[in-house]
Every structure is written in C-alpha cells, then in structure tokens.
Amino acid sequence: MASSKTRFAPSPTGLMHIGNARTALFSALFGGTFLLRIEDTDAERSRREFVDELLYDLRWLGLDWDEGPTNSEPCEDWFQSRRGRVYQHYYDELQRLALAYPCYCSATELEISRKLQLAAGKPPRYSGKCAHLTDEEIRRRQEEGRVPTLRFRVPKGQLVSFEDGVRGTQKFLSDDIGDFIIRRADGSAAFFFCNVIDDALMGVTDVVRGEDHLANTPRQLLVLQALGLPLPRYAHTALILGDDGAPLSKRNGSRSINQLREAGYFPGALLNMMARLGHYYESDELMDLAGLRARFSTHHLGKSPSRFDPAHLDHWQSLAIRSVPDAELDAWLRAETRVIVPEHQRVEFRDVVRSNCLFPEQADTWARILFTDERLSIEDAAAEVARQAGEAFFLAAIDAANAKGEDFNGFLAALKAVTGAKGKGLFMPLRAAFTGRHDGPELGLLYRLIDPHRLHRRLAEFTYISE
Image (cartoon, rainbow, N blue to C red):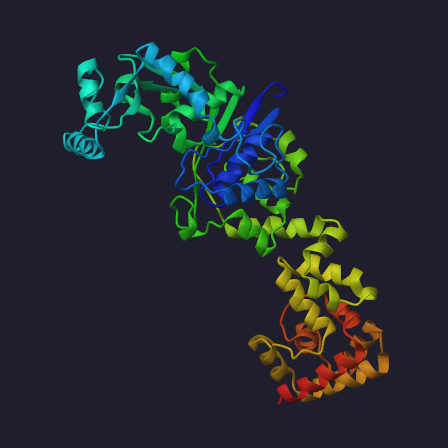
C-alpha cells in the first residue's frame, strides 16, 4: 500500500524480544511509510540504554524506518515523554466538552470495587463514582491534597465496531467498557490516550499489533471520535507461544534480539523465521526483506496462536549461512578462527562452515580440528568405531596414506584392497581418526584440508585407541 503508513511504537523498558520484533517486522512489511515512535511515558522503567539497543537491533535486522528518531536523545517529535504539551491540549478539549473528568478514587477504593464486581459475577469496570462530582466536592478533595487522575467519559448505550484486518468485524458495547484513565495522577499520559493521539497526529493509517491490544481498540476509537480525529485501520496478530504452549517468555525459550545476535544468528534467518510466525508464505525459500514485503498480506495472517520452535529458527540459520556472501561469512567468524585458517585453504574452509555449522563456535571447533595440533576431543561413538575397526585397519591406513599422498581416491582404494573394508566400515573409522567425531564434512575434503603429517599422526594415535 503506497499510501499507507504503519508504525512501531515500543516502550524502552527492556531489550527487544521476538514478539515485539515480529510486530516491527509485520509493520515494516505492510508497505508504504514505516514510522518509529518511542513510548517512554513509564518514567520509572524507561531507560535510554534500551532505546540505544532498540535502534541498533532494528538497524541490524534491516528494519530501517522512514520517520522517527535518529538517536536516543529524547525529543518532542518522537518521544512521548516530551509530548506532554501536545496531550494537555487534548485533555483540555475533552474537559471542555465534558467528556473527561478528574477522579479522586484511591488505589484501595478501586481494588475493593473491582473485587466486589468480580464476586457478583460482573466484569470489573470503573463504577463512575467521580463522574458527577460538583465543583464544591472537587474543591474539597483538592484541599485535602488528593491528586486526581483524569478519566474519559465513555458514552452510554453505544455499539463500537470496526473491521479488523485479521479477525474481521469486531463489536463492543460501550456499557461494558467503563470510564478509563487517560492521565495518571503523576501527570503522565496513559497508554490508551497518548498512543492513539500520536497515531492520529502522525498520520498513521494502519496499526499492526498483537491481539493482546484488541480490547484497547474500542477505547481508543471512542477517544478519536470524541476529538474528531482520523481513525486508523487495525490488524491484530495472534500471540506467539513457547515450546510449552504458554505465551512466549524467557521461561519457555524467548531470547532478546541482542542475545540471538550474540549467539551468531544472521538477521536474514531471524527475519524469515519471524515472517512465518503467524503469517503464511507459499514459498519456503530464504527471502530478503524486499521479497518478504512483496509477498506479505494481512489476509495471510492467522487467527490462531503460532508456536516458536528453536529448530525452525535453526533451519533458517542454515539457509542463511549457505547464502551469505563470502565477506559476510568471514566477518561472522571469530577473529581467532580467521587466524587459524591458512589463507590458501580459506575457500574450502568456507565450504566446511556452510555445510556443517550454525554458529561461530562450531566453525572455530572445525578450524582447530583441521588446522591445529590441539588434542582431539574424541566422542564415545568415534572411539567405539575405532575399537571395532582394530589396530590393523589404522596401520594399513598409514601405509596407504604414505603410498598415495594427496590422491584420496587412490588412498581409499589401497586401504580397501588391504583390509577388505567397505561402506561405513571403511569411512567411519577414517572419520573418527581424522576428527575424533562420527559426523562432519565430506571425507575427501577432510583428507585434503588436514596437513599430511598431522593426518598420519592421528591415524597412528588411533592404533592405540583401537587396542
């Protein structure tokens, strides 16, 4: 939608996780203009360092925004903590229209009222106790030093309906909502209010967000209608569940984007995984951001929760490793790994990495196996293979390697002729001796990459293991 404008409006109270990163991705894929806004009205929990990390995460993922802050320095344009003057204008307007009023109810009074309503089988909502205070009653409460919140006066007997981009027609009765707080007692704007005011003033046409915000929408539409401000379209995406079926959290597998980046995941792997969490693509191929955007549609967003599966992410990581340019793959490796790999063997080592590794530490392990004299860590399965092959097998392998040199096929033929071994009985003991492992790169590639003296020494060492 070339004329659309979406937004991502996070609160900087922690590191960005998969759930809110997916919201940012879906908003960016929707099309048109993508706006970033920082909703930092929670003064106690908002931190500037979280804004810094948020901006870095988005840029690392490739989710560049068309409108929004360039750094973490709070400003009136994009940080809600600096927009109090803007919100005050609309508070005054609602009070002028008698559509907002001060509420002096204490937290204790509200909790008692809530419990009584629940005990009576009624949905908890504000009773309206302060909705009709006289000027004298207000003055007396002010003299007592009581600081009010400001509540929006919800009209009675109205049906609030809207067409959700995922869930179709949604209908809410205003009598079930209750008057809600739009300004806290400390003067800060409540989410219901500042979120929707900024959407209207910033020209947001389409809001893509989680279904946990679905019940907020009728409240926000009522505010916009009361002020005569434009209404955006909404699309509420299904929640993401963890491996235990509960909403995704640290407890059941969620990690921050920072943690995933530090682990070595490529941004393309995360983008392709997240794009398919609750959204259907006909293609199973790895796509760049432009490809994901071209095939994205709210009609392909599911209504049922989607489950985050780490194996699913690892699948996309394996495809990303196979597709990234050589320079990017080299930069992904640890600095010490790059030092270990001989320059003339760098191309073949990349093949090892692309086919056998998901993370930098795995690439480092293979570099040390292939290019250093560090003692091999021998897996139990590899040791058992060596014992079954026997001492004579490895002595024959040493002779064949000495006779055939770099000719791997000749080496295999000579070894097979002497031992009669074939199939797994031929390949598995060699793999064990070369690497100490029972799986890994193609055997011929290992034979070419490991220095002949190192390879001969390992074969000799395995004659003792096989005893």
